[in-house]
Length: 295
Length: 267
Ligand SMILES: [Zn+2]
Image 1 (cartoon, protein in one colour):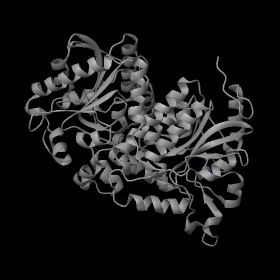
Image 2 (image 1 turned 90 degrees about the vertical axis):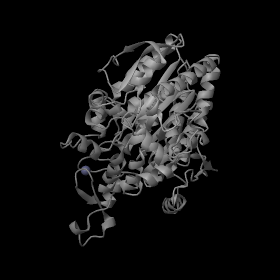
Image 3 (image 1 turned 90 degrees about the horizontal axis):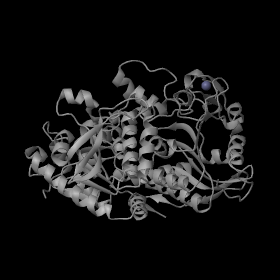
Image 4 (image 1 turned 180 degrees about the vertical axis):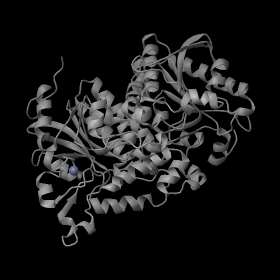
């Protein structure tokens, strides 16, 4: 069952990783074009970037790096990172794990798959966490689990709301059972923050799947999702193999989850700062340094 | 206790006549009364739940049902729950909390079911909610892994004050076959994966995941189901008594810390 699940998800990820097809545009350098993995339309990269990496035809919201996400979300220079030097170890001595982490670290400039910290969004203070799918498909191992849990604990202590931009292929299997336990650790920290009256907003981005969907990503007081992104628990192909029939195109999209009742709203990233700051204001947060109010 | 490899234990838990909750519940509890349904969508045969007495103490029992034959497996979907199964479990957990009954969960699943309807009804949300809610359930929770504990589908019934495992049971983030298939693109390396993954009860004691190993008869539980049931019963009676003596704030604090401290990293 689960066997092919992760594989399937990964294969789907690889379908559209932002690389345009060479043969369709032989005379244009490929880094000048973006081909939408959802509707296949091709646009010039500069236009795509001007639109904050959204597709002009179907409005698919493409993946952002954590740094890009931070830049379009937080007020300029407001971000103060938490636990930025935490790095993984190799709990089950999985062959070449350290090497892989090192290579990804060099490539992305990240220590692991999530950055956490405190920032302001249009003047409203919040703890934020941003997952970066380039780092081992943003799978959750000890570092992701610990940083998310600490972010919620920090928010609970400082009476701050939490906003998480989720993306993940699921548990980081290279860390064995410890990766599974991060689901309990993070969900527990979310619950404590919630029981203390804290506000938690989840923004589901492409793709949010597996053990992250089955833990903190599904526990927001308010769950937003970007248009056309993939969200699910199980992989598409394993499901297709089970039911032996073609799945609808919109299966496991943000819109599918909205229709099924698991997402509060689809949120366009070009107005995300406004959306988030409005929600914070409606929860009686005041600009800069305000505490949440009970009752 | 025997010193078997993960692969040898995998073979033992795959024995067709390995006892299941259908054998254990009548042997361990009295007055078991099954309750059905999640009060929202339906009833899931993959999870059996109800109330019973354990050594004359009322308890709530929530169990994943491995079938002993094709008929039972059809009813229990090979022990792969749908969201309504997890929601039934949570409903009965809240009921246990209200009436101050300890909760005993039996884990025995390859994982949560992967299907269109399961996705549509929020498999991820159902598991997430169980994990979060069990973390603060104001009554003792004890989980026992009987055979196979696979991924989030198992964890949804394993956020507890104490996790016990039968001696040959395995508990993992994904099945060894799945691990080999994804990380090495070669499902035939299943045995190698089983050894590498550190999934036996002894391994999991080292990680602080498992708190107690319940012995099985030499050769495996299928060779003497009654003896195995006695061993589980003895452990449960002791654990319920111990945990019931702990005041609730301390219990919940310890439960949170049990999971909070699991993780290995540098900083
Ligand atoms: Zn498009």
